[in-house]
Image (cartoon, rainbow, N blue to C red; front, top):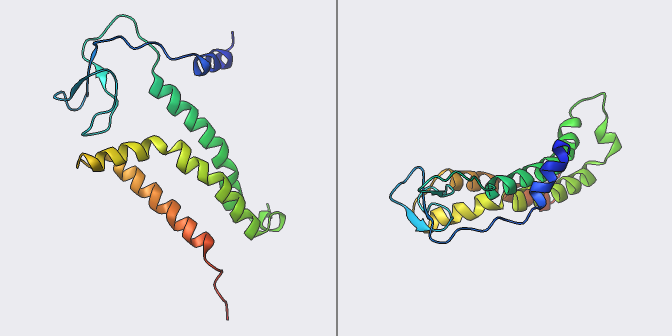
Length: 163
């Protein structure tokens, strides 16, 4: 079995059952303890079992974030080429794709990257606001959210009049 086949098999495998009664804690805040997995209300990190076991199950967070990373990368590469490629004179991308069409393509490809691939960051940022404990997730969500909203506003605004 090739690496790609094994990787795809782990992505499509059903989640392993969670053992009842296992206490989980935050690696950064050991005072946080709960029955079952989840996220730390203080820092947003994934909780780990208090007692290590010999059997290591699948890391669902890693699987999910890996999938989001690769889908986000595939959608981001055309956006990068459309925007940055226009600044390389010999490529002539501005002649190939009109700027207004390029803007719509970039918007269509960037929206799932920000909203779907970045959704776990927005969820954890919201939890940090609710718990009044801002952390790195709130910083990431604030930065990407502000940039996306600014781009949305700039895209929907009429073009400037040049006199």
